[in-house]
Image (cartoon, rainbow, N blue to C red; front, side, top):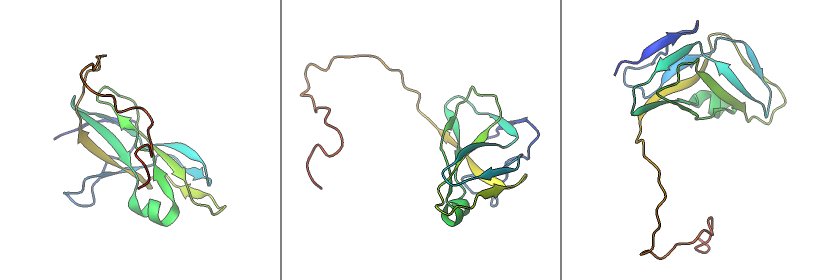
Length: 141
């Protein structure tokens, strides 16, 4: 699948290996990310995702495991044409901030197929209701 990129002054997504699920995204700003802080990090591109697909920015495994920097996995809808941002949170308990420099890898772009349902109200008269008690309602595990 070819994905058209919209140029906002950033580097094209790049895969380290041809069969990697995610393509690296790169920061176009220098940002200090303090512990407990969440910031939107612009990556300098937009994408035109076909209907029936969505983009997601996932965490870089090294940033997560070594430094506690995780990405929110917010969907990039097929109709969105603005600049993509990696939404990063510093979960590291150490007081020092994490420095993101221009050009640093800040996430992995993954394109996923989706099902687009329609929603409607319907009464389920012939089924016994399960209830709405939620978490832990079926007893101890």
